[in-house]
Length: 214
Image (tube, rainbow, N blue to C red; front, side, top):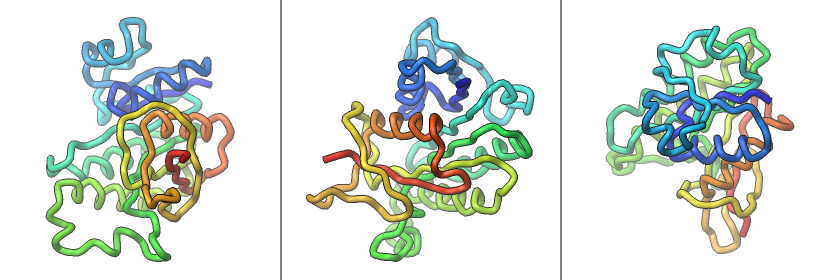
C-alpha cells in the first residue's frame, strides 16, 4: 500500500511512518522541513517536502491512503489549523478512492453518555489545550458532513503520551478506560491501530477510538 503521512516527522507521525515501513508499505512522509525529517526518520526516508496548504490533488494522487498526523502546539492559539488542514485535505481528495485518516482528538467522545465537549465549562476553556480540543471536535463534525471522501477518524484516549507499541483495545464513540480508570494510548499503539485500520478498514465514514491494553 502507498501511504502518505502529512506531518510524518512529528511526534505521532514518526511512529506511524516507522510502523508502516516495518510492515513493508511504500511510505512517504509529507513534511515542511527536510532536515528535521531526516533527523527523525533517517537520511534514507522517503519525503515530500511541501507545506500542507501547498499540496495539490496531483501530489496526493499516487497514494492509496493519506494520514493527517499534523498537530498544533498547546497554547499556540492556532487550534483552527486542525480544521483548516482537514478541509484542505478533503478538498483535494473529493471524489477519489483514497483513504483519508484523521486523528481528531478525544473531545468528541462520550463519557457516561454525554459528549465530552459539552461538559467543558468556562474554566476549562482557559486551559492551554482547549483551543486544539475545540477545533478537533469541529473537525470531526465537519468530517461527518463529508460523504464524498473515504474518510476515517480516530480519537486517542484522554492521555496520548509518547511510548512504544505494547497492544491496544479498540472502541467506537465512548472514552475508553482501563480497570484502574486510566485513559491512555501511546504513540506506538496509536500507530499500530492506524496501520491496522488502513490495512483492513472497519470504520469508513466513521470514527473509532483506542486505549493501551492493560
